[in-house]
Length: 140
Image 1 (cartoon, rainbow, N blue to C red):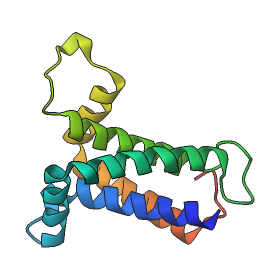
Image 2 (spheres, rainbow, N blue to C red):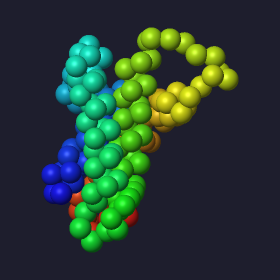
Image 3 (tube, rainbow, N blue to C red):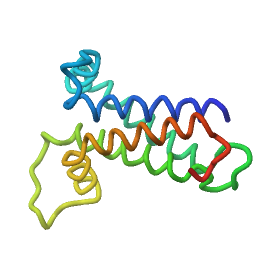
Image 4 (cartoon, helix red, strand yellow):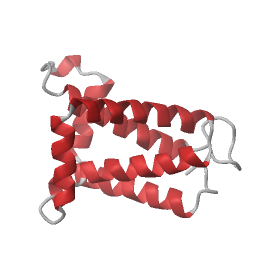
């Protein structure tokens, strides 16, 4: 399952790039290009959302070797899932405006990540780096 491990790290780093694009986009133009591609290409949004769901399921049921059979990569799995919810929120953001009392989990996650993009981006990068350097810490 080394492929799932590498896909997870790549997805986390890609999510970090999207989250940090507003803060560091002028310094690193590639981040702005990624954000522009995400906003203009519906197929890229669909691929990221579908890939996030598949990686979340794979991390839940097939963690790295020394870990428990179920939910071994818990923290990366939760982070990939929250990134997937944020991508879904970004994709659906322009479709409808909801009242405050009608917020769903998707809306709450998306709004939280919008308010704390920079911090969540650095947290996601930290998880990806720790997961890459020490994969034997499967619960992390």
